[in-house]
Each structure stands twice: as structure tokens, then as C-alpha cells.
Length: 141
Image (cartoon, rainbow, N blue to C red; front, side):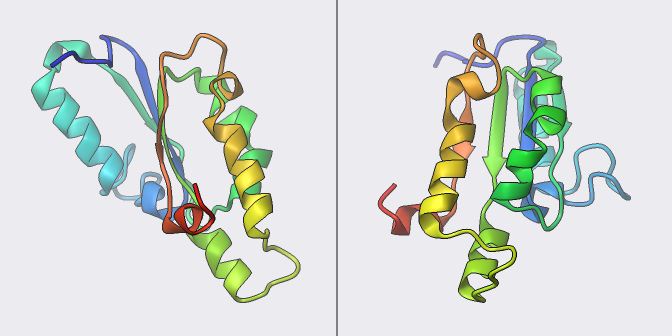
């Protein structure tokens, strides 16, 4: 099987608490969740790849917050690959009918689509891996 991730590329994890996993606390720099597990699996399988793995997940983050911080949290790292896990806080706010912070499903989809566009990171990005929530499936994605 061909390996898509090449040596010395940058893999960036971005999202909410599911991604954060205390990566700025006791489990610096990747947290104790799926970003660390993915990094460990790649390192064990392909030790010579020496990937740069970055976790910029933020506990409580929403798709709107991510859009506002996209340049600082994502673009400045110039990732070749990124994993996005965002939306559970958006869903919670929308179900609570929080008029101040919630986004409707169509607004969520519009903001999220920006992250899925290859040009949203850099024109020559090698690829993206996007992880979605069931909310997008319910909207027909």
C-alpha cells in the first residue's frame, strides 16, 4: 500500500476539546487523545518519516471561532495534512437555541466548507483528512 504522507511533512490537528485533550497541560504537546495516538502509530510504522505533528485544538471551540483563528491556528503552520474535528459545541449551542453563539446548520456547513477547500490552507497542500460529526450527515453531507 502506498503511503501518502511523505517524510518531514507537517500534520496538524485542529478542533475542539476532542482534539485538545490537554495538549497545553499535563500532556504537552499532543494531548492524551487521538492526535497522540495517530502520531504514535505513524512514528512506529514509519520512524524515518520524522513528521512534524502539531495539535492546535481548543477546548470549547466552535466552527465560528475556528474560522476567526484560521490564519493563526492553521495557515501559519503551513501543514501538508490536517485533521479537523469540530462541531459538537456548535450542535450543543444550536440545540439549546442560544441566539448569541449558535449557528444554524446551513451556516455551519458554509463555514465548514471553507476548511475543506484545498486553497484554504495553501495552494500546494499535499492533502487534507477531514473528520466530521454526525450533524453534517444529518444535513445530507
